[in-house]
Length: 151
Ligand code: 4NP
Image 1 (cartoon, rainbow, N blue to C red):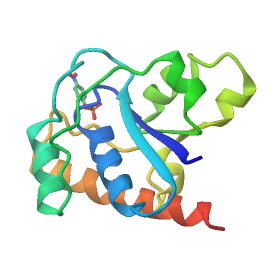
Image 2 (cartoon, rainbow, N blue to C red):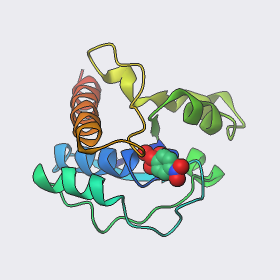
Image 3 (cartoon, protein in one colour):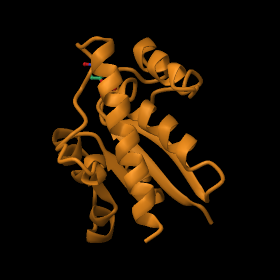
């Protein structure tokens, strides 16, 4: 059975779609399944933000087919690892848990940043530079996270 990884942000249109795309790219050929979701339902059914699609595309990753969805309790049960972009969304994800075993699956993606980042900053009101920074940070975190699984 594959290890199931869920990336979580607020809207599931900027950060977690990038994290999903980057993780899938890096883990290709390994036994992982990856998905993403948002704690909010504002953008349910929407494609990723065009700026996330663009930064992924210029790095050779196509995320244009993703569709936003809201995080559910079922996700907490089904996924093995739930990697969250920031503290507020971490709290909202933890709030869905009904057991200590579920709580143990949830961590900040930046726990694996390797360079003291505390969260993946929300780029929604930002510009291309902010999306580049999110892409680079998410890449570093996913690389380190995958390397840790092999230890
Ligand atoms: P995300 O970014 O959580 O990385 O997808 C956001 C997307 C939408 C909003 C905020 C952040 N919003 O307020 O609609």
